[in-house]
Image 1 (cartoon, rainbow, N blue to C red):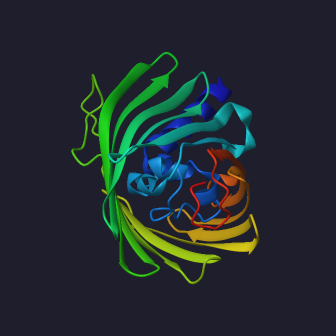
Image 2: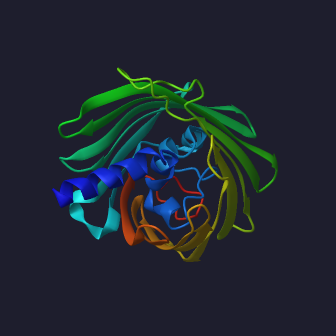
Image 3: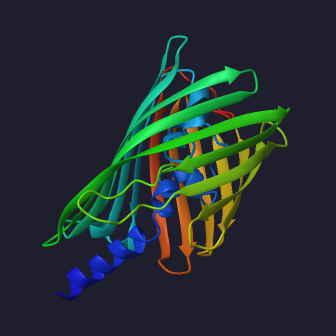
Length: 279
């Protein structure tokens, strides 16, 4: 019974902080404290779908994390995307959080397109499902929309809205909150990017995130970041070898303690090792 109550409390913590689900997937972004709104890689499907538009080839990724370092409270995610000739980039993604007592899953279909030399846009349709033992299941469909622009060379700005129409959970009177994220990133060189963003969820304090990624040597990246509300510090490593990407992140959370994230990615025939690579 204590275990059930414990997992139920974790479910409630995540349910009342839904924006957490929007930033956790992707160990690259995790190493930057979730500051990934202008990052272009396969995990853009969880941060800002506009970033998918710059994927030149088929890309896919797997993600895994243990909440409280307990395998029964795991985060698992998958994402894949492919250019569709001149039309843009189409993607599919799925994530699962929790255990047999209480869990959350999300299935998404994304589409992104470059609208001009300096702007991309993306949309996504999600189906969310919440399940609790002895309490039944509920779910709903929500949308996401975002853009990334490059007003001047090497400076990127982006915005993303999750659940713009405030969807209601089926069979209930409960609405899912809408989340707005606005951020920027600057490439000081081909080796260094610094990002910062803010997030606002109705009836919750403003969240701030900042991160940096440095290409130490060819194919090897180090990352660090900080976030507020709740306070998080992060450190990450990534290695890209001919399109095969390994990522790991260590995150110190003032509520959850520390936990790790791991990612595996693959890009078809992509041999680039710059930090602007679709990882």
